[in-house]
Image (cartoon, rainbow, N blue to C red):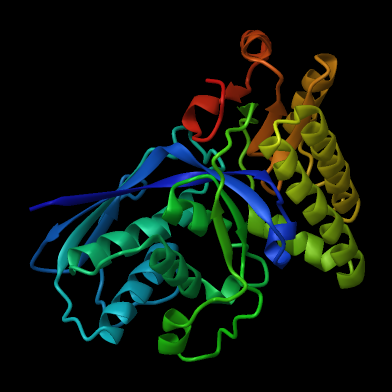
Length: 337
């Protein structure tokens, strides 16, 4: 019998860059899903609609070269930890998150990791919780702890809008059994029930968040960066409080402040955060007196416009210039579609 396990991607509403250093971020999942099909097989094989051919693997000698290998490796490590005998299987990954000839910037990498772990554990009759999926996802990528937030893993695992803060106190050199069984005391993953009055615009460009984060780390000293990120964190939490209080005017003032602080970070990054297409969307937003910000690390991917009404959304939807794409209907936790 074939089993299917589906997980969403993610979209950052606020808190990009700061979340890497252990501050808060707000994320919401996608309606587009990554599906992982798994069934019994006489060997261990994995394939994807993004690959040219299937890949054979040995669960006892997996490498750390690719995300799919890391996800498989941590899954079998957990099975060993639970003294569960491995069962050979055929895995097929089918992604709805990449509908163009490049990525939408909606967290397909994190979805691959969470989807594979979920499929392997469920196939072996493990009771899977979102927190377990998240922890295993983080441990599969622990070498990236300095440049990764793991927010995409949290959003894919929990499949709901969240306030998220990674645990900066973890000692990744501790034994696997201790890390997986312990309470991650500084971790924050809290559901957000409010929806966001936004339009999400894809720039028709893709970007690498990890490269941009590394660029910031290389070009801005720790103290200066921390001062900016502390201020970002304050505005992220204030924005959420204003949304919860239904005070949109105040909420959007915090979005304007967040975008201004992003420009401060970009001053140390040689303008790499703001691609030509992002600047074009910003100019369009300014011409319509809209509040706006980058979603994610910039360099491409997506821009968010913050709106006041369904009528305003409909008007902007009609006037959006090419080649930019309105992908709001791919996102959960939003008001307008």
